[in-house]
Image 1 (cartoon, one colour):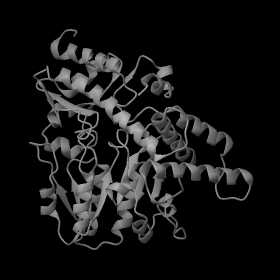
Image 2 (cartoon, rainbow, N blue to C red):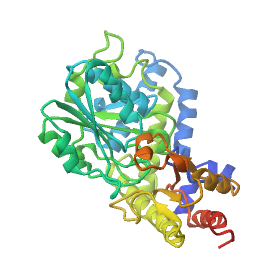
Image 3 (tube, rainbow, N blue to C red):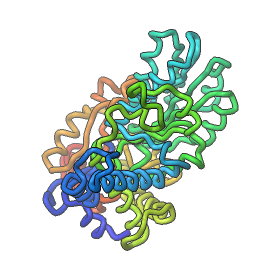
Image 4 (cartoon, rainbow, N blue to C red):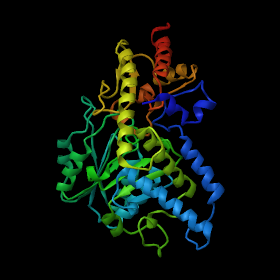
Length: 409
């Protein structure tokens, strides 16, 4: 992967060369194609869709092309299976309210204590109408969710199981194909949070056979919005969340319609990723997306291993999650705690070096509580992206060494 070319595609690195961005799990930098797409849409197509006049017809075609790009990106069968909204949180809230209209008191939803609150709170609130909420709990000794623990929770009343593809704290890649098959074998549906997975590995909803899958585009090098995939047969059968006369999918789940320019920008993100895979300008396609994410995985793993090698020399550091960089086991989102230093103190020291990392619970509130890390001010989280460099990791190591050991490396 040509890291110089990659960084040239992100205008921030020409504007602010001093800042190192390693809070990417909270939000990535935006690629040039996406920025230019927003400007182009607002300059050339800033009208309401669906009219017969030329500019409206052209705008409609542009949005259709962007939606096709997102369809290719997630490998959905149909564009109707792609729902775009203000955020992942809002999309899951809409989904929960629509699904709940078909459920009865005593029906069950299983959530985890690992997930971001987006994939918890919307379901917990359904207890008000008699839905039973059960929690699939992580085993603190392995930092893993175990299938046996899920099976023990499932009954004939289980309607839905909600879990994360990758924890935004642990970085572990969960075996969602296996879990989804197990869930389907017991007659339930699977709703997967892909927010922490999508920046690092290629989404493939058909291969995984998930019923619902969502991610945030502002963490995948685009603007601030969310995307949710749903199987068309399920979406078509659900009541909508839009005006009563709107009954078509996906529009019935998109009140007020999509944000046109931001949706259009996602086409630019997918275009960039295809160019990364192909090495030149190319039409949107899965093969080049796959190449791009293979390179992303390898590059990020190399950076992560460099950081892990250093942290292994600091006996007071405990990695919260898997302590390796294997591309089939984890992404480059690393959390840690120090035996005697609070997480906020570590981050505030690193801030002085113009390196952006972060501390806290990152809305994985129950996970931090379950692991007993609240008194530490949560974890220190370092989340790398494919535009980070080995030199930036070296700078981070130097800053960490100053506070851990009181000297330069």
